[in-house]
Length: 273
Ligand code: NAP
Image (cartoon, rainbow, N blue to C red; front, side, top):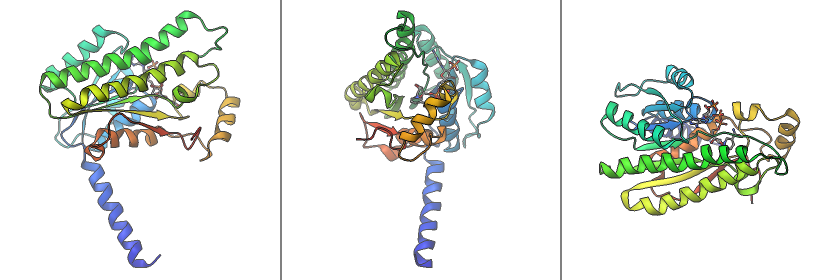
């Protein structure tokens, strides 16, 4: 490569990074599951791009820990930590009320990352294990998407972006995860439907499908299973939460303004095609 093209590439990279660093200025954003793993990385990324972040998690303490580590938004508007149980309509409704009381507006970006696993083989899975995972992962996605969309429509907001976290497992299934795979397949269907219904209000809805990402959720997976999975990933490693967060930030921002109703896999190529 000539020194000239190297120089041009560096200039373009700097320009792109500067644009990325400011593309969420003055945006109020909500991140559920923001106290851990991918959600926490999303909070860090959105804050670094200039957004005000409401960090919501079942554990208020974890949400506070996330806020303590966030870069201050460029308008000097503080980030907030709050407790929410996404599987409860009452709790989600209260969350939106709290946000609008504090910021006088609903969040125009929502990244819904709260989720759980309760793995077991189909032959031995208890009904409670199935119900709990569906309630948090699928019903939670419905409640959060609905509440954010209702608030945006009610105030006549010109645009919104809702990003849900599905999983590649929702597409291909996974041993021991009948409940989780079903919930995540549901999240994709819910998100596509929301995209169709909400586009006329300027609200875009997209789903991110991570593969195997190093977080407290996958820390529970036995090392033997992790090694096997890694051997199947064309890029040869697990993903980092920040690598999922970058895609969420893109979908949150106007850089994705012509994208809605889609799912983006962040899997290192796992199960492609
Ligand atoms: P994580 O580290 O366990 O983070 C999930 C967060 O959500 C935790 O803080 C969790 O709290 C919280 N949460 C659980 N139930 C909640 C509820 N009812 N209301 C509000 N918050 C709740 O998991 P992660 O790996 O970052 O996963 C984030 C999202 O990505 C999830 O939807 C997950 O299904 C999805 N995903 C992850 C992977 C992966 O490989 N890590 C792959 C595909 C998809 P507790 O810790 O107290 O439960």
